Length: 329
Image (cartoon, rainbow, N blue to C red; front, side):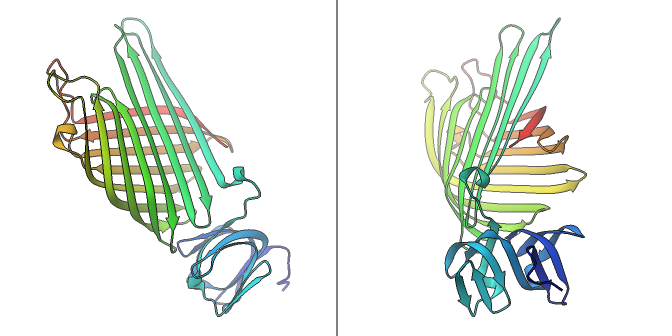
């Protein structure tokens, strides 16, 4: 058997050797594209030796982040020309593809949808979506935007926009610090002209591999809210300190289908809306390598909606379903 092959390989504790491409190691699980078996997820505890002929970026718990060809034989880790003796598998926090330029660190997707009716009830509705993920060996930057604009007969306008972003730094295979998380939204049906929530969180990766990912986080937050329309004598804006909780779950359903769920809870003063919930459930179906069909279901809930000057108080729940097409790049 040629262990000097110009291919990546892993040797299991059982003695079996699998050739192919080492894609990444996250949360103690190796994502490996086998020449014969296809995509595999291998628990690091089942691996005795690892060799990556191609350059990777490796984050070691005790030593930092390095790039280069990588090998591990049970007692020694070699990265390029650097050697770390008396090393163990627990020292390897993550392995990711080496990026030759900045664009290789990003995964992006944009989507667009429209619904236009004419006749007795004319309306126009447009939706836009954007997601971006920047990955390094010890950090993740995730950003997303989802917006809906609707115009009905008589000039009634409805606008929903939300931008969410967060930067996470990993200190082990599962634990991370998110020093800054931002959630900015506008919802005219909920009488919110602008709402900005800033938070700092600590989080944990419950599960992470090529088929499934689930992370949760919690931390203090500061929320600023400006209402669209209010009664005279009532403050049109306010701010408060609170707690922010978030969850992100993604699973590969097979047959080119993916399902993801984003959830956030933020506490706020009752005069500014009280506890706020945001749910986004997304289903995507790959049509080609870069084009996919998307279905998004949004459920926003404000426990204490603020009444408009007419006295009408918005419903606590705001639900939206949209269909569109997305492009990955």
